[in-house]
Image 1 (cartoon, rainbow, N blue to C red):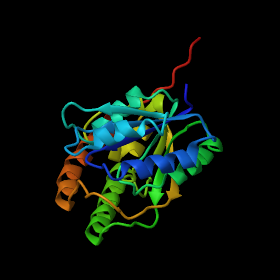
Image 2 (image 1 turned 45 degrees about the vertical axis):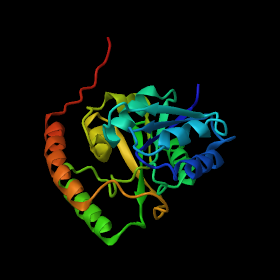
Image 3 (image 1 turned 90 degrees about the vertical axis):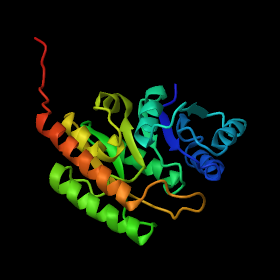
Image 4 (image 1 turned 30 degrees about the vertical axis):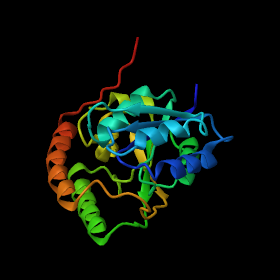
Length: 238
């Protein structure tokens, strides 16, 4: 069984698949027993065919396919459920996260307290458009004020977390943007680790500024309610 499962959600990212898989292999092969679980969210390009062809070069690769388009959070959720590793690393499929940072998250885990179950990538230097950077900055400020999750960048797709803890969290669309708050609600801790960020070199972004704003406001209210209603009680067996 692999120690680590790398879960990568993709939608119409055919040109980013081969180089990202090569980088994952360069970062992890020979250093940790791992698998890569790609979840194709019913792409309309030939991402599925590209993934199938990559199996010959990457025996660690497994491919899941959504029969109907369901979004990034569902892709991550199904990827984690199918994963065999006890720890999960997630990467965005657009190539902007650098797989070379995964060992950095693993190193942070190895020296952290047992209560820390989430290691979130923190893009200290963003390589996005001006509008995307501004909208993300506003969203992070509002989220941090409402949820008090002490996390500077929840939008980074590069994360490392314990599979068992993730599967305890309440599932809902866009939940992947609120993992630090949800992990806190479950009674555990998270920490942020500075990581790199790269400009997109192929394909197009799947999110617009208004999409993030309106969906984010609705989600914030829901997560704030979950935080207020959450309760963790220590149990001792006599």
